[in-house]
Image 1 (cartoon, rainbow, N blue to C red):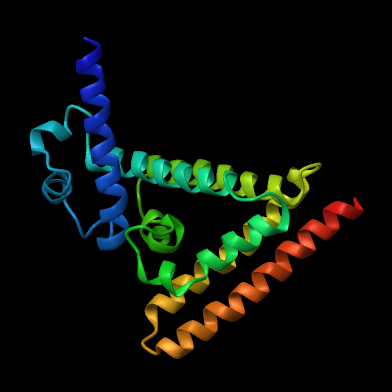
Image 2 (tube, one colour; image 1 turned 90 degrees about the vertical axis):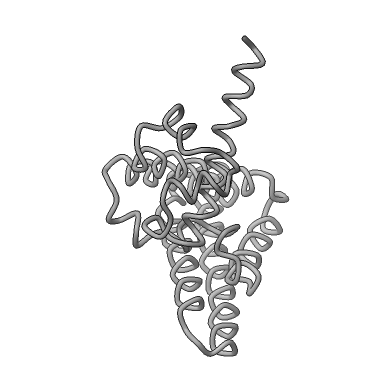
Length: 198
């Protein structure tokens, strides 16, 4: 019985990993269940043992991607060094060029906004967790006060990646990412400074 549950959990994990990568790379509407399951090395029939519909999978995949991103933030070095690492990786050409392994916000925001309420709620909850993790890192004594400013800085970062991915001039894209990194660090420093004075 235990082995059967382990197999079921492993299969679910394969589906979620496949969905997370392919939704970001191809778009939610750009890949169907057959393509997702094929990439995971599974049959279509296995899908319905775990999810009732593609909409349900989208919600779970979005939640899973944001949870993973929060875990990455939680594992960063303490203090400003961790924030700087986060900003420079997020606003790098490497992240910009790798949709499948990148941030779900930068890859999927426009589609999530048109999804069912379940997917949008999963995004809302997952984003709140990620913003809380950043706010705790910047203002450990009063993360609630930092949350709105942190969310604003993150929104600027995600938008910058989206624009850099869309434009055809690599030099302009690199310049945009570099300037966005400077601005993001200024915003995060301002949040930390305000929290320190509170």
